[in-house]
Amino acid sequence: MLGLLCILSIAFCGLFAAPAWAVPLSAVALATISYARHQPLFRRAADLGMQEAIDHTLLSSLFNGLTASVLAYGFGAALRYLSLGS
Image 1 (cartoon, rainbow, N blue to C red):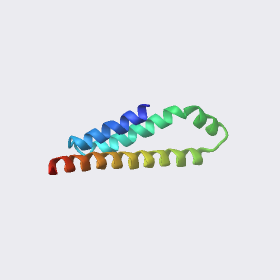
Image 2: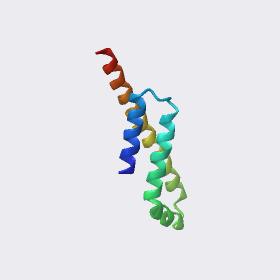
Image 3: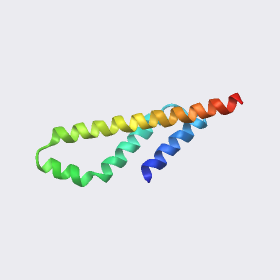
């Protein structure tokens, strides 16, 4: 639920023309939420010596958060553009 709230807030940032630096901030927030949810799994994987897999998973999570943030911000900005054009 917290992740959806973060995505909704970045969509509102796009809608209300907030600065674009809100996008990477939202991506970091989404990656942090993901890490917090899966921390026990990361700890078990680290005990098994799977650090490379952990690093790859964290980078993928950050990339996915960045993608979701950019799309949400873009959709909010598109909605703002459409509403101003009417």
